[in-house]
Length: 460
Ligand code: ATP
Image 1 (cartoon, helix red, strand yellow):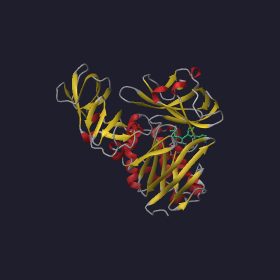
Image 2 (cartoon, rainbow, N blue to C red):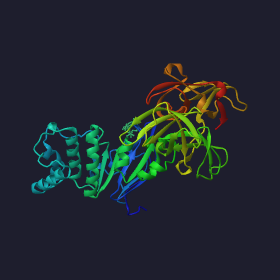
Image 3 (cartoon, rainbow, N blue to C red):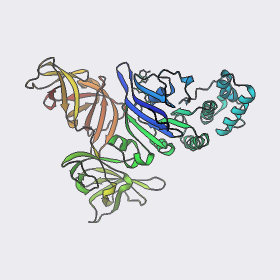
Image 4 (tube, protein in one colour):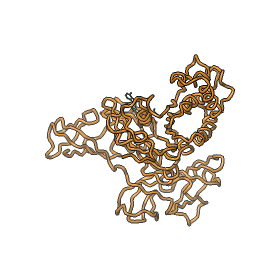
């Protein structure tokens, strides 16, 4: 049963393109009139989800309902939605008026009504008096306004927007964000917006859906997502953060940055590895004193308009980001405090790599689309399906993919204060995770090696 409050419900949606699992059991409810943003890095599946709502892509599994009616097999033009694409997709040979009127003419709407509707939407997007202009003569921002006008002239119940501002320059993007918010209020319809820009998501949305690797990571208001990220991915993706390895010693006591801190979290158990997130504005910084919890030396200080953004190298060998309204100059010795309430403790999603494999012989295992050497394991024989485990720190990442036994593509880099935790997508579809001191870039193609003695094999 669908709740009448929800205009769109996606229920257990999966999508495969060939053997690529692009959406993995995605469920999502969107309320009438809400401004919902689907946010995630490139390739996370957000456009595919939007296209499933629009009807351009059919899900492999799961159900999509709009107004309580199952839509899986309903073509796009019969759904009460309209889409604004990343590239304006206007007809270059038609002027502004005819671009907007096009769909209405096709539907057989009469001319006086067309004119009235076109003029009304032109006013809404701030383009009155532009109706006879060639679309070619318009700026990018103006073209995108026309594209929005063309979508809303159909009076859809839902407007789907796929990175509509990504081709605009910074200033124009900021202006259009304000206008989109206003249009959303004026129209009173549901907006579903796709972006990889977290600031845009925080500015525009009532609700943000954070996605990564085909999975919904968190759904919440901008404040919830900023203040209470559920995992290190969300914390990193939404704004600048310090994300650190920690150990929950016992209830309300956690160690990280080489020190013990009082926190407010309970129920993790004793001596459990956790991720700790500290927003830069939650680190209190002062000239060196014995009243701080930990000390360091400022290594960079940049004025950001209202506050200063500083990096501090701690005496225990970590690097932290700190924001403050006062500048602490480079080289200054400082002390810092973090209050219990400002320490976010999160379960680690995983503590080591585990990937499926198959034994080739006693000392070789096939995994990650490659054959790795391993030590013999009692009870494990050729042909067996196994689980292969190895620690994040035991993955050697090589510059040249040819130097690796397997290869992959870096899809996510998380700085953890004194090392990087990187995600490498392999052609087999498995992600592996590595802790490294080296600096990599997103999308670097790398080789992967793991020493035989660091590979642990168990029966699957
Ligand atoms: P971006 O911001 O880069 O568009 P996204 O999060 O919107 O990323 P999608 O466009 O949904 O991601 O794509 C998710 C994955 O699915 C990508 O790896 C993409 O290459 C793949 N993909 C998308 N459409 C197809 C298709 N028609 N056939 C095969 N693979 C596809």
